[in-house]
Picture 1 (tube, rainbow, N blue to C red):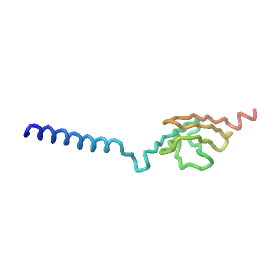
Picture 2 (picture 1 turned 90 degrees about the horizontal axis):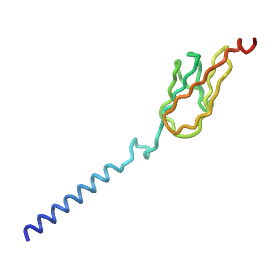
Picture 3 (picture 1 turned 90 degrees about the vertical axis):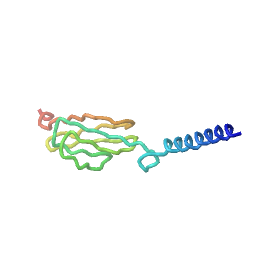
Picture 4 (picture 1 turned 180 degrees about the horizontal axis):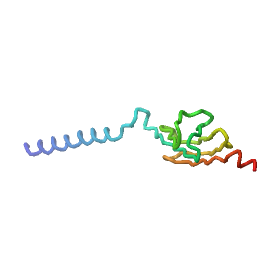
Amino acid sequence: MFMKRIIFLSVLVLLVTGGLLFAQSSTSSGGRGGAKTFDLTITSNVGSAQVFINGAAQNNKGMPFTASGLAGGSYNVVVKAPGYQDGSASVNLTANQTVTINLNSMTAALT
């Protein structure tokens, strides 16, 4: 009888602790329901270029510029600099990604 009680209690402890461990590992992270976010890094041949993502100016201080914490999806990236033609790229963000947008000089376009 004593041995059956020991075995029963051992199995009960294993079931309870196993359930607690499973509950811990299945919680969402980041407090946002487990939503994944990604980094989008933009590089350009003009270090002082301004970056726009979906029409919104970014507070970049040169190149490369990384926009962090973006949700997956489609983005329109435009890079502008005085004396250069605007450059753009459409990005479907599904992982951390780097996009290079090189600008052409307006003086080169005139010749």
